[in-house]
Image (cartoon, rainbow, N blue to C red; front, side, top):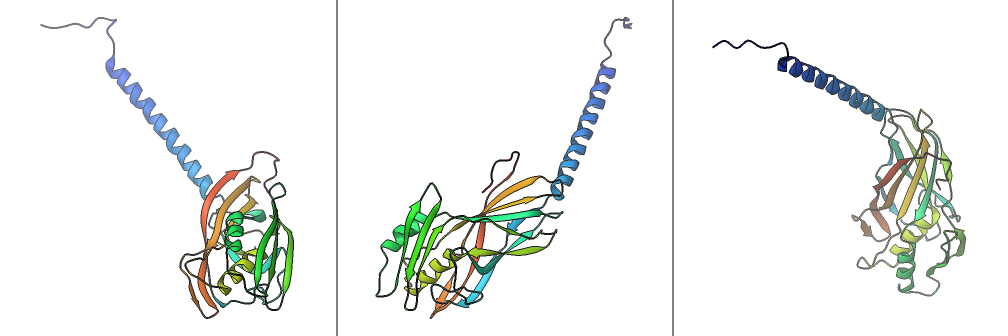
Length: 247
C-alpha cells in the first residue's frame, strides 16, 4: 500500500539537520573560548620560589650566612630565588613574610636546654600588631630585635623565564643558627615562613600569591656544617579586585 504524506506531516530530517548544525556551532564557540582562555593563561606571569640548596658552615647566632655580617632586626643578605614561569613579565613586585609557627617555636624554645651565656627567647608577642621581640645571647653577643613584623620589601620586575633573588628575614636565620648550636635531631623545631608576593601583569591586573617557605626534611649536619635546602609549598593565588591592602 502506498502512503501519501499530507502537507502537515513533520520533517524529521530537517529537524535533525538543524540540531546537528546548532551543536556544531556550540562546539566551535566552546573550542574558541577554551583556546582564548588557554592563550590568556599562557601569557600570565607565574611567580613562584625555587629550591635553594646550601652547604655551609653555620656562623654565630647573630651573623648572616652569605656575608658573615651582623644581622639587623629586619632583613638578612641571604636570598632565595623567585622565578617567572609564565609567558609575560611581572611588574611592581612586592613581598613580605609572616612567621607562621611563631607560638610553636616560642614554646619549643622555652623547653630547650639553657647554657651559661647562651640563650634565646621570643617575647612580647602582639597579635594585634602582628609583632614580637627576639632576644638572644651567645658567647660574644647579646641582642634584642624589637617589634619584628611582616615588613614589605620591593624588587625589580621579572621577565618571562627569568628570576630575581629576594632576601630572607633576619630572625629566620637567627633561629636556625641557634637551633643547631645545641643540636638534638629528635628535638629540632625550625621556623616556617608564609611568603606573600604581590605583582601586576601586562594588563595591570594585580595578583597575590602565597607560598610556605621552610627547610627540607632532608638535612645533614656534621660538626658545624649544615647541608640542606629551602623548599616551598603553594598555598593560594588570587586576583585583587579592590583597593584593599594586600599586606
